[in-house]
Image (cartoon, rainbow, N blue to C red; front, side, top):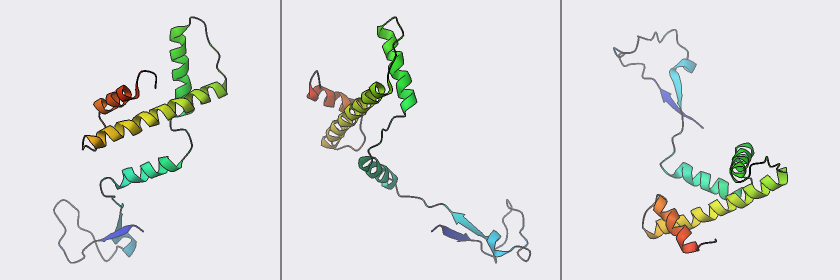
Length: 133
């Protein structure tokens, strides 16, 4: 439920605001709703739980497909044709790899007694994994 902010009827109007005629105003105009503000970190924890419980893909399909086709064009002169299942398999494998890299980078961050994942954490995670992992 949204919190209600009530206007004090006995106070004098400020110079910045025009004077309100309280007799002509009904109660719906006097009550302003204030949007709920979460404490820092609470919304991030909600997002983490939501993404951990979900199984859908995190990257949108069309931008990923465009990226795959663009990278494939760099290696061949001819136009390659892709099936939908091939792009979905690539996307699933890519997201699984990225999530596992970020898991390891987060462990490196926690080990360094920090909260924010930095580039050096990702580099260390990749170096620890080895050349082909």
